[in-house]
Length: 233
Image 1 (cartoon, rainbow, N blue to C red):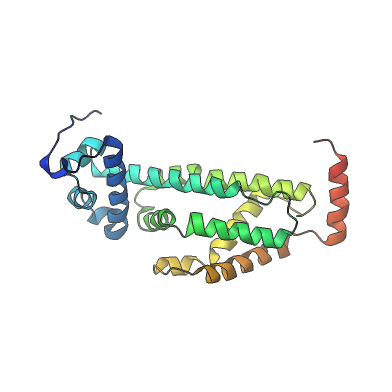
Image 2: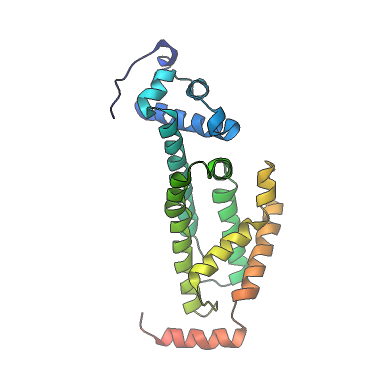
């Protein structure tokens, strides 16, 4: 559906382009939906927070339901982008598997779990997931589903190289994420922010637990590595 663009005095100055207004509305929408919930939020609140007119919000998104869907989609895409940036730093050829996985888990928590977008997304899922099952089913496929698959592929490579013993890399990836997130859930519910030294303690415990379950013992790992190197790429 197309909407006629109407310029109002309330958002004429300072002049902002279409993309800037769109982003401002999405950011304001995320804050208001998280603070008030879907039911409590309204277009006037979001327009005031974004410093635009209510007509501008309607021109961009049509109604509250479509704006809410756009907010979830935007945040999911941003979280995904950061997740894949962090995945690019996964220790594929570790010199010290434990230390490098801890450092990787730290980057994951700082840039993907404890950042502002991650907090918004958790809050929206917790408060609105039951009311909008189709919307958040899409989030599961486009968000965690893609990240888990990519992480599973990296764990599979570590197993092939002899560092890990895995029956199912997909299960291992989900368990790794669950362990990293386990001690962050309660603080997140109460809006607490963990300092870096606390995050390091949390991620260290998570990685040590993961490796107790999946790390090969020294002799077995060495034999597997020799076999793996003899195989063609």
